[in-house]
Image 1: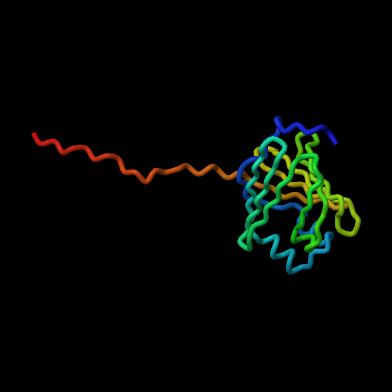
Image 2 (image 1 turned 30 degrees about the horizontal axis):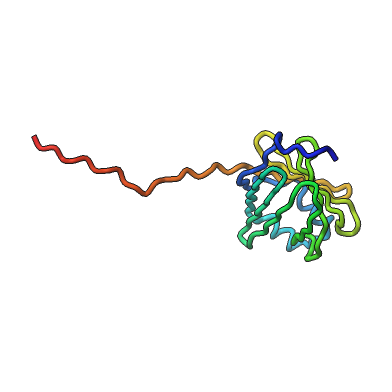
Amino acid sequence: MAEANTTDVDLSGKWKLDRNENFDEYMKNAGVGLIKRKLISSLPTTIEVTQTGDDFKFLTKTPLGSRQTTFTLGVVYPETNPMWGEREHRVLADFDGGKLVQNVNTAPKGRSMRFEREIVDGELVLTMVLGEMVAKRYFKKLEEAVQVSDEKPAAKPLELN
């Protein structure tokens, strides 16, 4: 894998799921049952990415709850994912070109698994690879909320002429 270069790519921000490509087939191939696949596919999902140098925090939120993953590039870290069951997996993340690549070293059923995240035309594109199966999830960046002050403008004194 290429040497980490985080200065070129910044994934930071809040991202809302816009659409999926081949996601149901991917989950089916990963052994996720029909009811769980339909539920996962239907959930509005947001991801908040905090990137500070080589350190990352992903906070994934759905109406059913949230899940946080933190890691440092080049350091193997443990991760559990509801799609994989409750088994803990070993993951190694690094940049490869303009993509954040997370390789799952203990993928289900011994197959190779990786996740690639990159910015394409202003969208965060998550490419999920399990063996030969590929799926994509596209996220649109949410605009930062503008802080509105609760202070009311000072009243002008009434002028009597």
